[in-house]
Length: 304
Image 1 (tube, rainbow, N blue to C red):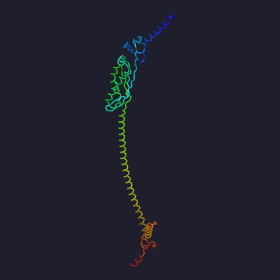
Image 2 (image 1 turned 60 degrees about the vertical axis):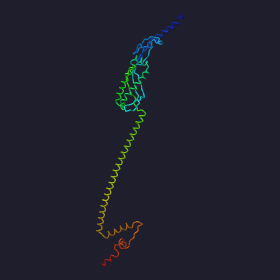
Image 3 (image 1 turned 90 degrees about the vertical axis):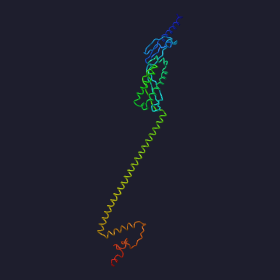
Image 4 (image 1 turned 30 degrees about the vertical axis):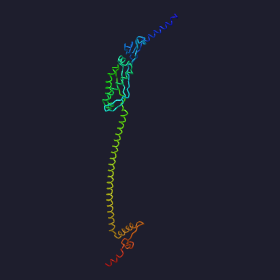
């Protein structure tokens, strides 16, 4: 019995290994391709425990697991040309599912990387075609939804040939290329400078117009002020002359004396005043006689 124990243990281990290699589990979100001697025997799409032939190392039955859930594939920095001739950089992503596992195995050997490499080429071409028929503004407007639907519809036949189903296509970013950005910036800068110069020119024109109006108003105000002052001065002189006339009529001698005193004050004011005049002139009559008699006037009157 002791001699058989090792053999029994080895047999149990072999049986356990055979049992373990005869079953496989498909998880939720997965599907399994059963390969027998390299040929596809079946595809298991539902979660559960399944039987297969053991001895996978001699390619009796091999299992290839493939994702069943939606997969996102990102494509960055795609250079596209719009209808206007300018180039832009686009970032996009595709959401797809592997719906035909047999075809997926036959075309790309079940390799997701190889499938996405083919999708990249076809998505790039579809984006170029769609953008090439429209202007840049379309990608920033409501037409963007229609553009993505167009790209998706163009991509679906190629994806189906790989065993894939395109669920959605989306654009994440649409930007100007570096060259176009510089050209656009320079154009916008020139436009802003021209607009600023136009605003400054309009400001200078408005300033000149306002200054002209103000200068005209100043001239009009000064003219009106001078006119009013002349009128007021004339009225004042008339009143003064009236007062003087009234005073003269009341006392002609005093008025004559007052006027002479004013003439002395105005004529002799200042230390540097020099007058060349005869002392016997009429101007100095009140210096010689308080009554203001002109010298020789009485003799002349007597002779007459």
